[in-house]
Image 1 (cartoon, rainbow, N blue to C red):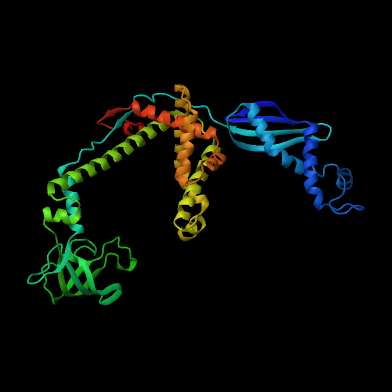
Image 2: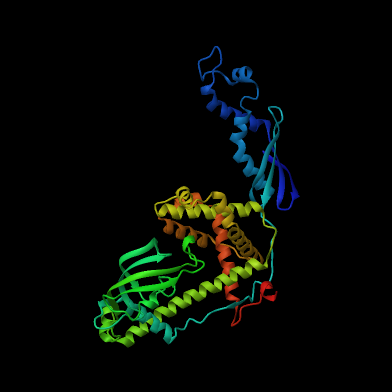
Length: 437
């Protein structure tokens, strides 16, 4: 078999015409005959024992044609694509133009190919990198968070309720003189000032004492979630049973020993400072990378084939399904509970998919411009990284992932490193077309 012709028919699409010789077709039919004849009945022969010529005479000369074409499909596709020299994304259509024992096969397929890509200005991209230096306020806030976590709730005696206290109350709500659903509870813990109840409720508890019984008069907001209560005046009959508050530990060396491996406040603050710095550095690096990715997307000039975007959408959904399975669920169950559809997910992920495709196209073009290549050692290292991540033998990974695809990942990584090495840090976000408007 050989490629007869290759022609560009429209943007990112080529028509390939492939020929299969009569000898190759005949060999494929023989292979199919050995498999298919076992289930064929021909008068005068036991089932599966009829010679090929008799089967073709009884069922028709073309009886094995479709099976032979199916048998040859992958070799035909691979030959057409390899001989065309095109970087094929996928096959749009496939048609047998003619088939006969005398002339063989002529097949026509239309393929989508990698688009032409242009990218400029990938060196010297301006990005904002936030400072990773911890502030005294951040360190204090972290200590306060630990302090709150190690607080204990104690009963208050001898005073009335104050903002920030936890009160234990019974309440019973009325509108238009009638009780309403969801407006009653007993021994309810409410933190005053938390905003858990509608505006004005918590404020009217402040100042009351244990065993007080009193009314709280409020008005439901106009945008309240329950339609029948929107904008209505309400009265809650309240009884206050208990007042509690959080008792916070003093921040001293004893506190430090209780909550950490350190002995002094100074040591503890330095450790917190180090951890905050690491966290902020990681966040700053992630932010820089996101800014660079957006900049690359903005600089890519390409008519991206829809097929590439659709495939990326499918990859994202498949990855999401795998995450769900790791959590004991699957995509079908998730969609059932969320009342969603696969089509809805596809639409939801389409923009993200197009951005990911454009990033890869941009990095691949940078790698091409810069002449980056992947060495055997680098490809092997990537294989090992994948094998380690999935806990699989490296030979299994090699059987699943082509070295050509691994190589693309390697030089795309090199392209990204080049972009990072040439960034220009600025205190001001670069102006975009949107900000200009």
